[in-house]
View 1 (cartoon, rainbow, N blue to C red):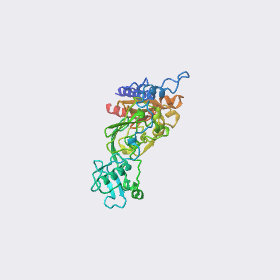
View 2 (cartoon, one colour; view 1 turned 90 degrees about the horizontal axis):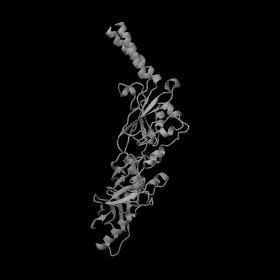
View 3 (spheres, rainbow, N blue to C red; view 1 turned 90 degrees about the vertical axis):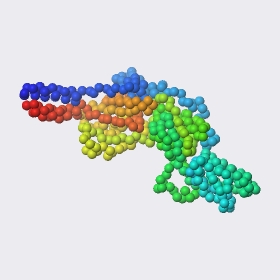
Length: 403
């Protein structure tokens, strides 16, 4: 029995050493990752380092897959007259004053059907209109209904803007219907609320795009669609990334926004902006051994926020996967789990950390992180070798039973 146990120990020790020192097979993917045909060309496998190998080709590879922007031939930055300025939506609070007329003076809320309803007058259409439009129509009604012989002086001012419900679809990270413009009680400035002439940026188009997770890197910002009351408006929002924001129009309840896709990854959209995702959350554990539960592994205790546009290797360093003694840590690897937002198909890539840190063309194989991505770090084969003792210990215990 002793000979049997010796052979068993030797066999298991060999297997343990092989598992500790051998490389794991490369991850398999449905997407053409190896050739650079996945969502990001940066996902492709690194080539062997060579002086005659052109570097930093990923951005050009991504651009070759782009469809022409639907609004590329337009003027850009122009906004239809019906979208300009602050416009009323249902539930907005409007202060109306007509000289010294106590009958019509007061605060009015735009009704669910989009009208202002003053006493003794037909409903005044308010949805989508400016306060100037309201003043003109009320003056006409007062004369037409016989309350005045000539149009009186009228003032219509917004006292408070209500939240609005809009639908957002297309090349955004979380397409869905969303409510924007809400405020909690602690955020309300009473002095401002009591003053006439309220204003808000919380109902702008950019606020709606942020509320659905921000635009994706494949978004066609030259032709963002806004449908209002059956009319389709096309907005060129490329100026957001050029220091211009002229097309950030105010939204109304019932508006529908669609961001078309260019079917390609655009590196120049991977930076913070008013319409980009707010950032990337990194949940840290960095465990060498799988844990038996959340409590001993400290899962959920630390979350780090990194800016939108952070790359894979930056996150690997940020999550403490790099460093330590060179002899035991030089051969660590990191794995990225992501999902193509166009096709919904997952992609897994693995990088040898030391190789990525040393090669000059590291940026060509260093993908940008997207919301929802996950990272796993693996220790080197030298570190894994220390686990052999545990395996041998388990085999010895088994061998004792065989005896």
